[in-house]
Each structure stands twice: as C-alpha cells, then as structure tokens.
Image 1 (tube, chains in turn blue, yellow):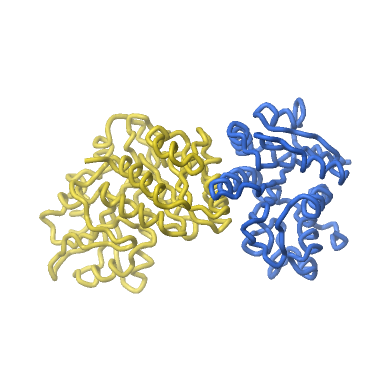
Image 2 (image 1 turned 60 degrees about the vertical axis):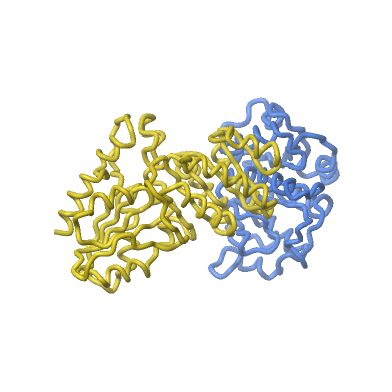
Length: 217
Length: 301
C-alpha cells in the first residue's frame, strides 16, 4: 500500500477494502495456500469490485501469492497486475473483474458447483461495493441465492457511501428482503468483521455490510 | 420425429445420468421438460428463473467450480441480453460452457422482433474461442451436443424448429460435400444447418458444388478451399439461417490467396415488423427455394 503514488485510479476504493481483505485472508478463509493456489478444497474469495485492487494485491503479496516486486510495476504493459485483476495472470485471484456486477452471479454459480461436487464445507465469499450494488445483475443473484438458501455464500459489501442515489432503508434491508442473514459492522474493526464472517447463518446466505469512511470525506 | 428441442432435453437428461460433472442451468424456458432430470439431480439441474444475466453468471461459476455447464434459453436471452456475461463470465474467466438456444432467427415469427435473434452468431463472432454448431436435424443435434458436453471449450449450439428432411452424417468442425459439381462447376454453395434442403432444391438444375455446414466456427477452411479448387471460378455463395454475411469474412480469410467473389445470403438486418410463420419470413428474407434459385443463379451467371 505504501507504494501507492496517488495516481492510481479508484484510490479510495483501494483503501476501503484493506481491512476486510486482511481479516478474510488471515482469520476466515480456509485452505488458501500460496504453494497450491488451486487447492480444490480451498474456500473461494471472489473480488467483484475489481476497481482499486491495490489493497488486494498488497494482501496477496504479503501472504506470498505473488512476489512483492510485482507491485512496483502495477499497471504497466508487462505487469500481470492491472488496474482490474485478471485470474489468468495472477496466482490466487479467483475471477477477473473490473466491470461491475459480475462477481455475485459468479459466486452463486461457484457455490452451487461446490455443492454439486459434494464439497460440503467450502464457502464462497465475494466482495462488492455499495455503488456496485446499483447494477441490476446483482439483484438477480440476491433474489435467487436467498430463495434457494445458499448457505455457503457470503457477500460483503463495502459501504463508503459512493452509490449515486444512496440506499433507501439501508443496504442490509435489500438482502434481508430476499431472505439473507445480514449484519452491519465497521469495516475497520477486525474483531467485529471476524465475528460477522464466522457467525452461523443456517439455511441462508450471509451479507456483511462493512461500513468505512465516506469516499468523499 | 422429435424436434431438436426435444432431442436436446432427452440427450441432456441421459448425459446427466452418465456424467456427474455435467450441470444444466435454465431460465424458466424448457424447465418443465427437465423436471424428471431435476428430480434425480437436484444439485445439477438449476432453474434460476427469468434472470438471464444470472443464467450465464451461474454457468461461469459452475465452470470455475469444476463442472461442465450447459445453459439454455431462447437466443435473444442467451446471447443478446446477457452478452457481457458471455464475454466476461465465460470468456474473460477462460472457462468453458455449452450454450444451447432454441428459436433461432424467426422460429417464433408470430411473437415479433423481441423473440427473433438473427445476430447471435455474428455477436459471438466478436469473441475469442467459440465453437458454433448449427445442426439441421435432431439426429445431428444429438451428435453435436454429445461432442460439446464431452469437451472443455466454449460451444454455442443453435437449435431450430426448422429441420431438413433427413439427417446428414456430421463430424464436428467439418463441412461435407452433399452435391458435387462437374469440372466446369460455376461455383460453391455453402448451406448451413436447416437451410440445406431449400438450397438443394434451389440448385437442383445448377452445376455447383454444395457444402453442408453444421459447424460454422471454427470455419472449415480446408473443405472450402478444396471445393473451390475444383470449380472453374472462385465464386462462393453462403446461405446461412442467421444474419446475412455473417461468415463472409471467414470465406475471405480462407481464400486470401485466391481472387474470389462472395455472396452472403441470410436474414436481413431490416426489421420486418411482421408476424406470421417461419415460412413467410423465409420468403420475406429470400431464403425459400424459389428466391434462393433466383439469387444464386443471378450471382453465378
């Protein structure tokens, strides 16, 4: 993160996700192994909000998925680290993202696929932004995942109040209406985040709304 | 005889029994027909409802989890509406899937433009790595579907209610000579999928070679070049049951070293704003035997 120059596109997006990513990777997700990034028994983390991936790359580097020196060439022609992550280029990255509104649908399919393969304990976590929730594709996924009780699915929404028209009634209500288990916590409080991610939610998908400082603050 | 759609259901149902790595994703269309399969394989027959972006997204996620997904609905809602999901959730993720449509260009003519999708193959042509099958008979559908399900790539299977009278032996990826012209043949006609019968009727009195294509991507360059080499002129007529000229660039690339002419026949861009029957639309687009005879004859002289 210290290598950020201020010229990165979506800089606030990069810093808003840092604590959530760190908690997920160091306290919550299981089976992630830099030496075996394709371990079939791993939990899956899908970064839907591909904007501002510097924090994501920093966490991957800190944990040994990618070399730290890759960070210095961020965004250059020969670098595998673009301003939007590419799963084909970066070890440990589960999906290529950048166009908003794709990660949750892919996460639903991944969770269904793991279930069909008999992988009963693996979980799928996807990270979205509050502005990203404006994309209609998310609401197809929210409604369906709630209706079928996709328990192994968790959506974490980073709320830095960047949605153009806001979320009347709060973000959590959108998920609750479709049968999700929800919790709203500080996106900077590591213990609260860990508790939010590990609390039981039998028979329902989980939405964790992680509130951070407003984008324009 | 069953329809291509019915053969798709029966074949897929059998494949689900045989292959635990196969999954089907639906968006309400044809869901009832898959009820028996869903009862046996509830985790691998998934109906997401009328949510077509999710349809393709879920297919992508299933592939990421190691399954072979088959996603199905009408082409307007499988290719056109969720095109970005097709591009990103499958292509950009570098995962495979089988997309199976039914309804083709104007099978549902009576429903109007909202349910017509003549540009589907042209849209997929903008993306990398898609195999496109356009069978002309239910028997061909089964061969191509089984081949697609057993693979790992991205495959589009375009099914139609329009059917040739008899099946042809199909080898995925290859065109077949179904009418061989003389040494003085005036050109080569490539007939795609269910337009083979109208083409054969149209050129019955013409000295041309007719190639039959049930796979249009990748385009069978070798067969086209071989057929063109036997004709007196390098004149090629494409007769495709989707947007006219969709494969013209493929012919140009195949004959890059040969001066040639191409006539691309197919469905016009013009929105007819007519209902009626597929047969009436075929006439309106000049794809009935009489119209084809006139257009092909005029081009080849």
